[in-house]
Image 1 (spheres, rainbow, N blue to C red):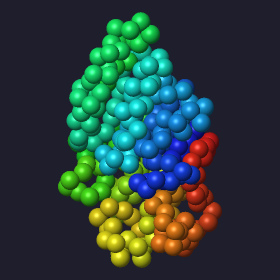
Image 2: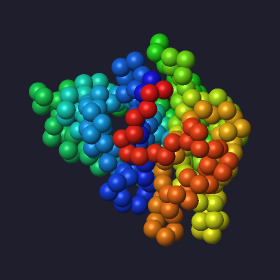
Image 3: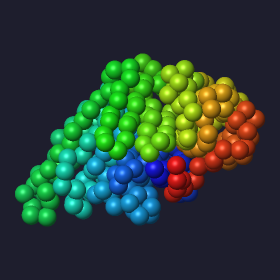
Length: 271
């Protein structure tokens, strides 16, 4: 398996760190997890044709995690995707897809429908909303486990995924508070990809406790659960307020430096 971090940033505009998105490559498939700001352009920079994306997995539907999806869906169709896009996510995923492609971009799609260059199946999508506590998606090449984690509940449903293939495992998390189900999902993972948004002091001062995990708590539980490599992402950097060095230092205090990876856009790892 190969993991590619397309975007290491979060909500705030940042020309270096683009929005949340990552690809897991396994057995010739490019599986996309979240589709934030600039994800399609980062795919191109990573040498991944947008039309090769056939399956998209959403952790949740805050806009920084899905705002590039409309563009990716349409441009991948125009570039040659000839099969329906499979879209997996929490409650509300179908509403997002219907809102974009039956309403917002309805006229755009109608103008292109029937053109000989655009396969009619490419404008279709198949949605699976995961509402059960645990779900498994399995093919001959890989197995994906999905669980619910907590991020501004009960307003949002929120998922984490464990991808298993070739005897290896990658756990992809969007945003989450400290969660026992996630700890169990990540047990012994070869790579845990986890948000690291704010230093603990900023989380307390700005009341982010219902949204995110404190860096030192993340480091502690990842070490206790035997995570081999921990990749940090979703940095909400603000000069003088949220500095990358402070985030990394906090995680190192409890996880250690060995196996800790500070995410950068287009970082690629063999797993």
